[in-house]
Length: 183
Image: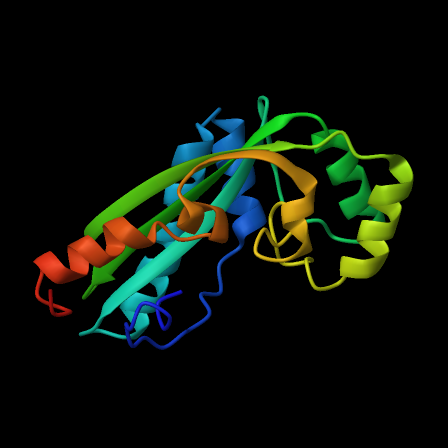
């Protein structure tokens, strides 16, 4: 998304235990918004400590279905079960970004999009999983909305970029206002 917006960036993996952090926050009854924000912050802080100087963007996305926070499916069967649970229901994708520089937080944003999944048949879900696994394995919802995942939905409200996993417009505004990119 950053490259498509004309922003040069390099990617670095932050080696954090997302499951442990998510579990600890869930045990504290943290809001899904706070879970996404905290995971994004952990990632930005970890890379910033390793790379002093540049601004580091950490991001994360959480899926909220009712009171549950769902993770990335771990298998085709897990994907099938998750999609069956989501069918004919609304869910939220909550995307967070945090910028650190020299080990200090500089900026953060969280955006939410609401999506309603169609009431799809078991046979259609089985076929969808067969066609799309493992390509969607890294996606918290088990779909790529920019691809066949769009057929799963009957309604979408909110930021397209939040659905894709990054609150891009607030990020671009911050980068312009701070002089990192030209406006």
